[in-house]
Length: 65
Length: 257
Figure 1 (spheres, each protein chain N blue to C red):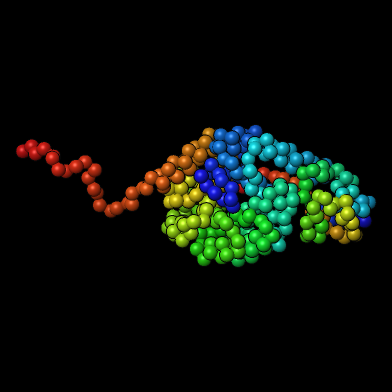
Figure 2 (tube, rainbow over the protein chains, first blue to last red):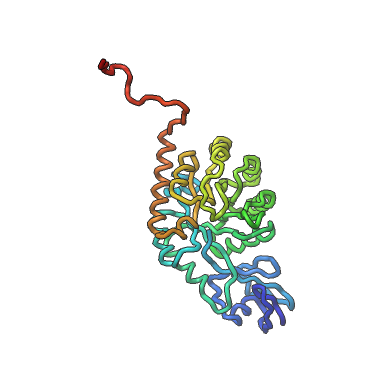
């Protein structure tokens, strides 16, 4: 399945957002996620089924002003 | 004491966390300033990296309240979604709302700002809007549910200081009961003292401290300036006048001729 993850095309096998984070070696504790522009809460990632062409955003805390 | 969204704050200085020479210097600057609120952001995390986690641990160790921002968002949709992700990530319904309208000046898109503020307020967010010093926009933001206004005093990162003190004074007069925090454009502690003397409730700054030669010392200097400005406002400063007025009594002056 082909997804766009943080603006880059990725070929992945994960079926859910939680599995995707695991497959791409993200630390799930410090992330906020969205699929196709809609926020996916941490508790919902295991039930968030991915589809070919989905756009995923994975954000983390950063310095800001 | 300053009350914002039901929270009582002792410090009237809010600091951003970006652009410091190192995380350790940022942490020291925050501690030295005594500030209770720091601004943070969200950005894309690289696969396999733990940068966000490390930064978040550092902030949590400081024991300060976080005010996530929507920096760099140019549309209502971007800002709203970023705010929702910030609430998820930082566990707070506070959001410093930025909807940028102009690339060069980073001036807020006040139309998008009001729209985003209304959406987020309806969703239970406590919105801190980065806005211009326009009274009508301020009124609209309050109508949209904002409990605080954060006007710029000059473009972000410009260090120019209050470009239009009259507009800031007008805001203070128009919204006497609304917490007003100057956000953006302060360069020196004297600028912070000046806006506090005008009666503003607090200041939020980042670049002036982070890019100073000694950020920790500058954080302390800003802290002192904010306190001095606040005390001066409460003490009732004199109005300027055009003509000289002798401060020493004239009556009883000796005559030598």
